[in-house]
Image (cartoon, rainbow, N blue to C red):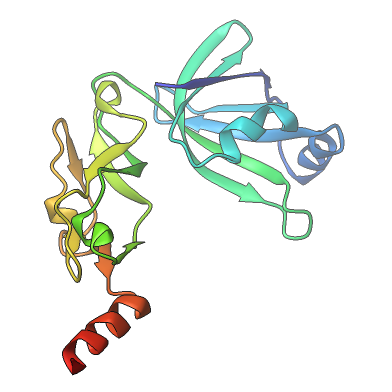
Length: 192
């Protein structure tokens, strides 16, 4: 599993004035919670780019004053005008404590419906799961090989081990729909 390392400093000053000062120095304030105690820190804004601007699920290792915290991103706040990261919430991973995470879906296989002229429509990009940190994965693979035209794969069809899916089981994840060209082809064949 991919891990991004961020080096920062523990935060001793709080409030609007201190936060404005940090941001003027291109530092982003953040908080790590879920462990033994809450940890407030700042880190350079540039160090958050590989964490924030990616569709991948990854671990974040935050190094502060000789201590290291293994975390996952829980919330990112952006500036209203500039779209820059202004705050980051991280959840510390504790070995025997389950966490809720959003893991991306990876579709594998070539759908029968697509081979027959249909179009694959993905309706969800990720699933919310609850698992122990050691069972978290980069993605959840969904095999679409048997998917035919006008069929769906739903959340309940995804088979996973070692974690619980929290999304509603009846929600469709992907489907193969009939394309306009295929409908015209069928209409032409029906007229003959």
